[in-house]
Length: 65
Image (tube, rainbow, N blue to C red; front, side, top):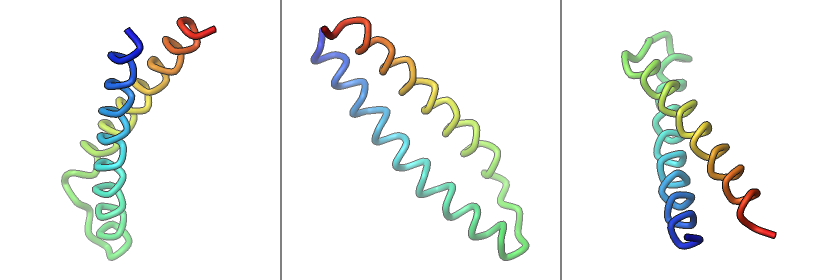
């Protein structure tokens, strides 16, 4: 069970890192006066990933002593 949780955490971490890179690029474009069409998608994906990490943290808290 802990291996499954570890895998889920590692997957969410990778997603968060990729989304962070993309958000940084989108914000850079936004600061130059351009509104990238993907900005809303990345923001939603980031929020979803954070929710998944929160859920995983709660699951670990319940299962670990």
